[in-house]
Length: 197
Image 1: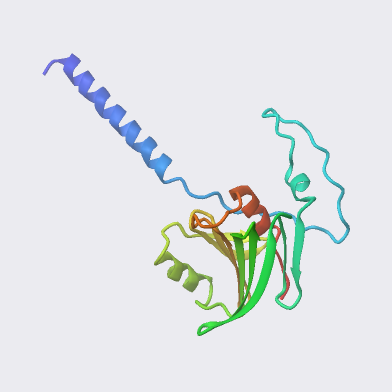
Image 2: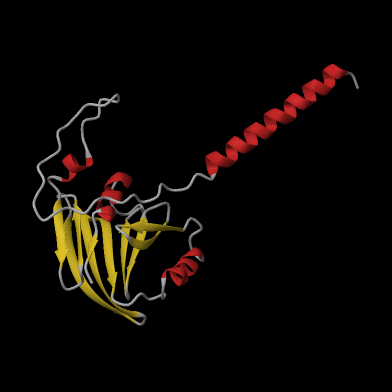
């Protein structure tokens, strides 16, 4: 074989390797981890000053949530922000694995968000929950939300926060039947969660 033919084959192999590695990273990209947000203080903070960035976007998270409502339930020890367009319903539920409290948020009668407080974590600790959820979802990740251990799965549309015996499940309705929150709004809801045992 002449040297020119060898160089062409080597170049083809190199291109195939580069495309393969690039494809692997493109298709195995994981969901963004939940970032922690500083808890809000007891005194309301005035809206942040809007500044224009290179992309001409002027809305900050604080500006966006200024008009949001705050859900507070002292009995179940949870508080979080949610968009003002959502109407909520609450109900207590009894399961064979333990009692729970469910808050459903709808926009125009379409389910958007569900938050369930499990009074006793039905699957045990975070590692048992991780193993249980992995049987149904392959993209389960451990996370931390406001200093509490958490699991994030279903392309980031479900987050379970663990606190003592309780767990707090946040589910964004992406079933196609409801009207899910945007990923950014869902993360704001989850990151605004304050848990009190």
